[in-house]
Length: 252
Image (cartoon, rainbow, N blue to C red; front, side, top):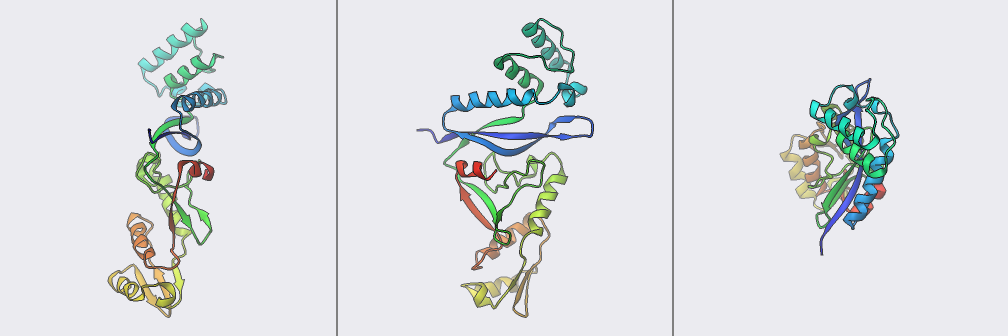
């Protein structure tokens, strides 16, 4: 029996103050999770076609000279074949679902992704106990932020259209953490001796007047440092929770 599941995930496009740039696609919220591939493909097609007609063609980069000659020729030939009319390059003509879906693929106006995922692999989300909330990416989509090793991983820079969104996500994440903890080492940890050793060995930790302070630089190193500290704390600074794909869909 296959462990694969099929995830439909929304994606949005960056805006350059004139039109939506199809090359600036950002992953967003999970729309649905399916075990049956055919069912997933049918729903994916319906969503793609529905979204295709929600905005005018000229509002996308493909209509503003950012495609290549081969792509434009294929689009023009397709529209002529299916409608019997020349494509005006501004409005998408009415077509049946199959043809509209094919047009969306030719033009690149795909507001959703269909991703095949091995469901036996774990999926993790970040949870902030200080705010009692899951951590979300600081992008227009604001999709739940994952820390896992699969196609849904969002903490990785390759999933952001530019450094701004990645940096904003990281900065917001660390800004919301509670990085000053009050109490004796025995109150903070079931292993106070090990906690004291960690403090002594690391410049990013200080402990004075029964207050543990964590120095954060809002980067991957700080993330890993706090993970190592969390292992010794009774109340972790952030939690990494394992969830199923179905649970993940409800968080978005």
